[in-house]
Length: 240
Image (cartoon, rainbow, N blue to C red; front, side):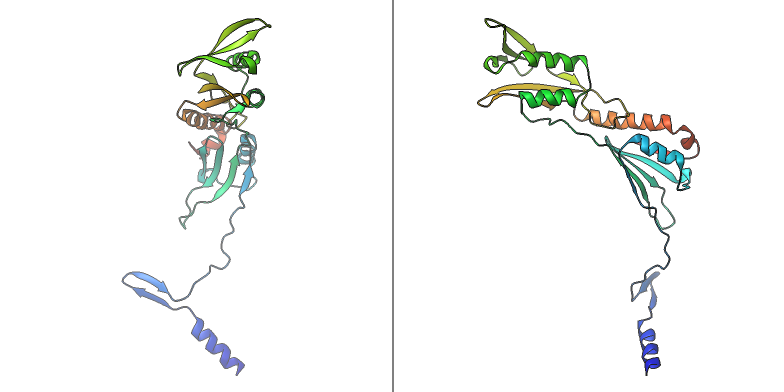
């Protein structure tokens, strides 16, 4: 009885292959046995570690079968070319760890100055803006003129003497927005200052239409190309 039951199960559960009008159909789901194991994806955060991985080639990868794709201003992935099953494997994901300034949002003076000092590259225009902000007091933060291009803010010099300080717009700054290994792109920002019931508030609004993202991707490509010359000669492809 046991033998007959087993024979019945095998007979009735074997997959049936049907060919119809040039197409092949099966009445049961088939699972590939001993399928090729994929390489576990690595998660990195610096271009240096990505370059080190590619150069060391501990996984014995074929450079001619690899593509470095610069996804955006803070992301790069290492992928394989399409295999015989029309599949592409993502081997490495490299995402920059950056703390981006709160653009398009008004902040109180202290938070704004701290962000300007800690999240922007040192530059003449950034330092000039910091000097201007250092003279702006809450009691003197009265906007005298605002034509949409420049603002004149009344500031006090000493106790009695007052003077008008002109804040330029737009202003060129280089915030930390991409991998630390490359020079941060400079872009234009519109600076605004407002005197509210809670005190002075300040904001930076992006004004370059996202050009900085394209520039960042090109700089990443240049950096990787410079440090992976031998691997490129062996077939490695870099796309941006």
